Image 1 (cartoon, one colour):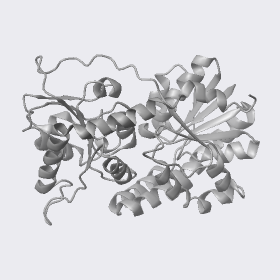
Image 2: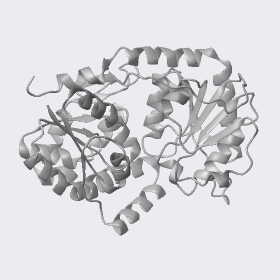
Image 3: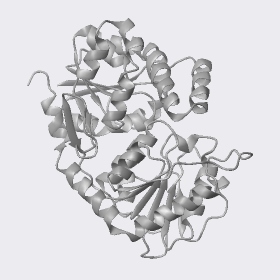
Amino acid sequence: MRVLFASTRGSGHFHPLIPFIDACTARGDDVLVVAPPGLEASLAAREQPYRIGGEPPRDELTRVMKRVLELAPDEGVSLMTTEVFGRLGVAAMLPALEEVCRTWRPDLVLHEAYEFASVVAAERQGIAHARVAVSAARFSRSTDALLATVLEPYGPGITERLRTSPYLTRLPASLDPSPYAVTHRYHEPSRPGALPDRWGGSAEPLVYITLGTEAGAMPTATALYRAVLEAVSGLPVRILLTAGRGTDLRGLGPLPPHAHVEAWVPQADVLGSASLVVCHGGSGTVFGALAAGVPLVCVPLFADQPANARLVAGAGAGLAVTPTGGPADDSAVLGPDDVSRIRSAAELLLKDPSYRARAGRLADEMRATTPCRELIGTLDPHS
């Protein structure tokens, strides 16, 4: 089978495609990845062939993103979906994807859920397409409602055919019932490696702190990390904080003796040893932690993070701490009350075994889904 993979630039959007790219490669399928310039370094480090598409005009994208960050979360999601992923993203990536679909002729287009140019290109060439979820199904369905004005100018009925295409998700049905008629649930077999001992042989519980790949590059990232470190540093735990490659680690200041900071660590290695995750509720971290049976404290900031935090809390697999910010004259995203609430949430999750038990039951349900390599075979339009 010949499979075309398409992604937007964010690592959190590309990473869910990786197990399928690897599975297709292992099966002997012909694979091609098409992505924006922002992913070129990641693609160049892999073995599969790739092509780089276009990107929106920098000034226009900067203006839109500034507005996104200034809006309330729901309004920001709407603008991000219609303008960044929709209008700007489709216009930038469509020429490259149309050329690939016309000349390379894939049997299947597999795209992350917010890359829409490949859907337009596949529809125009009569090629089967399916999408890989990067968020909970109910969140994706809510943003689908915004797409008609974006996609219909490229061809009548494209929005509906996107909605009825196969939807591939890592989340279990008990946590995230899907409104999509054709839903496939899958898991990626995990083989965590050993986590190096950075704590002098201490056996205290390990708390993993991360803000993912996008928030870690924000101007407020250093202050956010300092606040979360303050929240958990007084607890009898070991701390591992991954700050992302774009964060100035010097800005974190002196660290507690039981805290260790890295730019990046393989997530599976950390989660195989962690007792608790403190994060912003990004899908990659939440899905990974639940798959490993690790409870979470979610401190949601934007995008799908509030929805993910509600799912985790509703399932009893963790707690959500919605930021209230500093005093009126303070621009801090997390204020003293937030720090105290994060500390209390972390203490409760470490003491009460019911949260880990519920996360463990979700992990069992996720492991019972179809391995991604088997799922790929069922998507072959010629099978």
